[in-house]
Image (cartoon, rainbow, N blue to C red; front, side):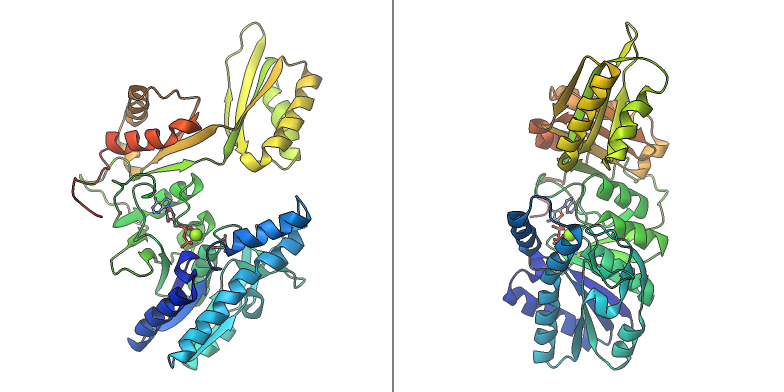
Length: 411
Ligand code: ADP
Ligand code: ASP
Ligand code: MG
């Protein structure tokens, strides 16, 4: 008998019929003798609908109140699923994050889980009940409702699995595993049987939303066996694993991630004196804007150009701050660009292979795609390109690194 935490995402509980289907699935596992804790998201589209409602009141809603509201989406689905289970003769009980006591910090809309009280759940499991927990939400020390950031139900699932020392955490979604890249963009993408935590962490942080980055961090930290599976199709899914296989077959690149959520800012003709980077990025950071990629050009005529990227939501704010800095520093001009995208290749195989980056650049050059910025780490290379070329770039790289599914495979 195993203890399994199963998380079902928004599309998997998007209608009452689907919730009934999820209940059937959970029942099957239970009938086989496993203890089951289920984590569910809100019905697909519901979180967006709620955020939109708040925006009708205020462009920047008070984060505490936003969390009180968006957490309601999950409260609906836990109750519906518990009802569907009980209807099938499966004893079940639903809990909100507060009721379990998923304790978080007080960073509303992006709270971090600090501690989970597993006693209540353990008691229910012992009594033979399936426990259905609301994803995405917690409670801070003062009793305020918090949420964990978009896609946060994944993190609830993994954190519960860690707290309960579950045998496995299964993330059920609308794809049958983690693919070499988003299968909605590249039809020839292939499902991976396995991917390492390290690679999955990069993929998630570079834009693959199949798993929330914090869920992967948690799973790695607490060694939670994690698997991504299709909610309604049988299959092995993708196992997120600790071990890197040292095989000759190891592909150099495991996957390609991309992100349309960034914007680029350039400050031109800054007097090139010590401390330039600090003078520019200090105020940006003080304005609570996170910077991703940074490039500073070699100085000529005693001035330099400085370029960086930020989240698109922070673009207007960053632009305002940068215009102020430009005036103060006597810079020539500030240029902003929101029509950019970041494409990254990820793979632990890169460690043992030279020339990976140049192969990437060659593939992009062949398609006449201009690279605006580059950043590398041990297991990834990222480039910023014009947004309109994003899909072309991802497809070209997928082919160049021999990730395409053989003709006739899949679908
Ligand atoms: P859920 O609502 O179940 O949490 P998400 O929409 O958050 O589902 O995540 C699943 C989606 O992630 C897929 O539909 C797919 O389009 C997207 N995705 C992005 N990159 C990948 C990838 N490398 N492998 C699989 N899916 C990916
Ligand atoms: N419902 C939340 C969201 O849409 C959490 C989740 O689905 O994981 O972001
Ligand atoms: Mg998700």
